[in-house]
Image 1 (cartoon, one colour):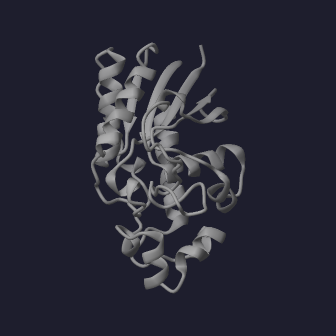
Image 2 (cartoon, rainbow, N blue to C red; image 1 turned 60 degrees about the vertical axis):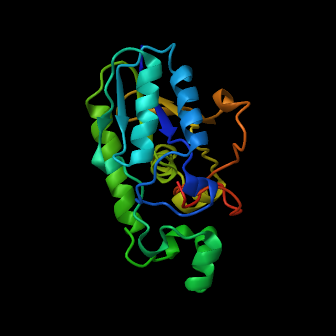
Image 3 (cartoon, rainbow, N blue to C red; image 1 turned 45 degrees about the vertical axis):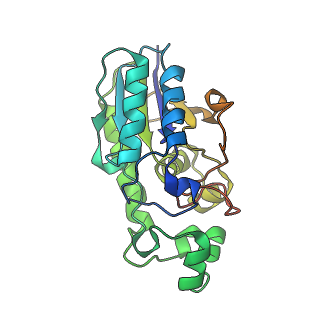
Length: 230
């Protein structure tokens, strides 16, 4: 079979629930997030995964551990430091409304053109995209045919999808929906995988308060579909 990678956005945290920008702040899963992670474990239980890779941030590691436990093949998630979410500097821990109040409407400017906004003490977007591209290419280069899971963040997944699709990153961030515990799948050769689906969430049906979330680790209520609270 071909090499297939499931790109999983981590399950919900309290900051996702409260619509706070997370970036690289190391926030654990909320009670709902733990339930979402268990659902992911059940989703992958019928797939003989050959490997699980995860961002070093706690919310991703907890999600990856639940997937490994549910899968039942004795896999230990491998931590890859470069799969961490973008560092958001002075914005981390704030809501979009608080960002706008403290930084002269900067979040609204970000919504219209993310790459034009320079966030104080944050990672430059260009450097972040290079980091993500390098990290995922390194992961793919070490894989044989089979199925794998990569647990990471909305911004990371969006950055890689922009590369794979040849899409404008600003436009993709504004238009792409990536929910907590959503699953995106890519398949094919290392240099030219193709996208099978984006943001599958049927395994979350019936859980309460599963609201749409966005790209750089945010939650809901922003008007964008790929935001900063990933």
